[in-house]
Length: 185
Length: 100
Image 1 (cartoon, rainbow over the protein chains, first blue to last red):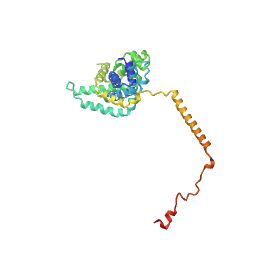
Image 2: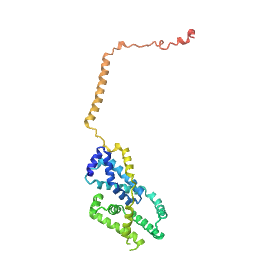
Image 3: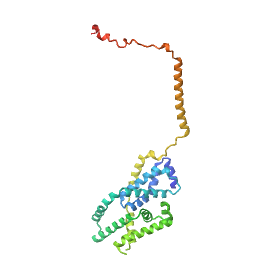
Image 4: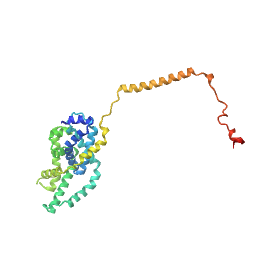
């Protein structure tokens, strides 16, 4: 059944159809949210917010674009709002969480030193992604976490494909610059 | 390893993160609570507005006409005024000595 048909059925009051839609897209929304918040719990909160928002505003979906495109737009906006809302909380918990991860992880294969290095690197990558400008971050997350084509990203962000390519290039350069000090060439 | 490979490795690890399997059930429970919100607001048509306005006007006309009928049938001479209200509250009953 197509998304448009599902939406029609949902709007007629059938909640089972909404469950179908939810099951179909929840992983995509979760994965995109993970790209922004890097925390399972926060990503799940975003998934919940996104689908409740979708349920509330589904009647306003005109169908001029694909449902998935509209859903990605809602996900991006919800994720950005979530980050802005929890900016201060993240500053406090960031350092604590990374320390907790370091002490909790036991890996037989890697030495303690290697573990420490890997953890530090992950924190650095996460922080570098978080420092990306908003548009670059959106394009980067959609490209890397959702593996969408530049055309699809352009449709979601309502910009040209050339602009998407430029954003991705800049994001890559930015991340390389940030990481090169730590990992070398 | 190059920086790009480290980034890809980091993303791969994040993508492996499993979602709570009960999240869909939780969301559906929230959706159930929002049940009334999804249905688009019913538009009130013009004829419904007209009906309400017409019934208000009708009630006003009926009120005025009933009032005027009352005025026509009213005879000013037939008004009786009970000036002597001593019967209403006959205090003598209470103050008479035989009352007890």
